[in-house]
Image (cartoon, rainbow, N blue to C red):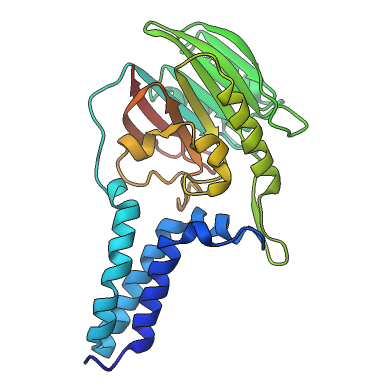
Length: 305
């Protein structure tokens, strides 16, 4: 029993090492580090594979070795499994990548408006159909601003709405002040460039990383102390390349969510790339909304002043 399964035990140790030292996997070749970090929680499936093989082999050595990856996975992600949501907050926000080729923009707008958010952010607004969203949402949201392919809708007055340069060549980010009853909040809406996995080039994320740096600089210069970032960042909170943004803000899902809150793809969510992050505000709940005609799920959060 103790002599069998040496290879399985080694696989368990290797799996533990990948999770514990993921930050040491270099990005110099195909951005492998960022690719690993995008799907890092899914490495936990390897635990079940090794467990099944260890039971078939009746290997005590492999079973003992499995304690290491289990402990590391729980240390990294155990806090996301439990429900940390609390009572209603002072401000509810929703963000949704509506998909430029959405076949039902009006229906999508009605579904996200039904969540009852105080502030709604939409990304990937095709100029030809942006008016559909504006018309559908106007009865619920009195104030709105569309800048390029991103937009913000608010039940409270908006001031100082303007584009944010994230080095894309066209506008895919904005900043506005929401004059809430509890005081002003700087709200950023951003859609960072897409990433791709290519056989020869690997994980192509260079343009996204440059945009993340530009967005991080804009947020760092924000004079208002209370900040909310809404948008499709095309990356997870584990991805080191988003550190210019994630180092300044707190994820509502990590602080007050129920589960991982995966948002993409809508048909079988595998990663949380649609983010709600805050500074100077306390997250009290965070959740994913039902699917729309988009390939992303909308995500929502409530925060307290």
